[in-house]
Length: 109
Image 1 (cartoon, one colour):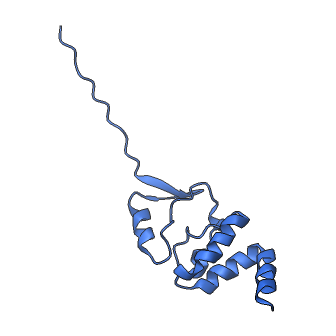
Image 2 (cartoon, one colour):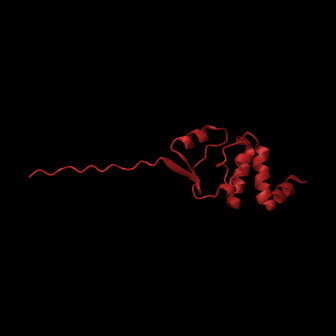
Image 3 (cartoon, one colour):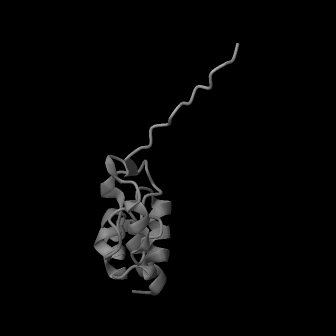
């Protein structure tokens, strides 16, 4: 008696999650990463869309996450990669005013 091979086809997802509640067609996230300052687009799947500063800096809307103070500091450090670094800084300072106070204290203003 010969046994038959059972072929199970995996369902390929047509959409992928790039941020909490945001899904795009497969391959679109790769194109988003090509935009200047957007290399991390789609890598923070559990972060809410309002917790990104990328759109205000001219980068992809799901880059430069600022959902924690540590990520906000990192966004400030990487802001120079965005087309409009002042937009990233403004978004971070709006959400975390204590970082602006710290910056002003360090700069002597």
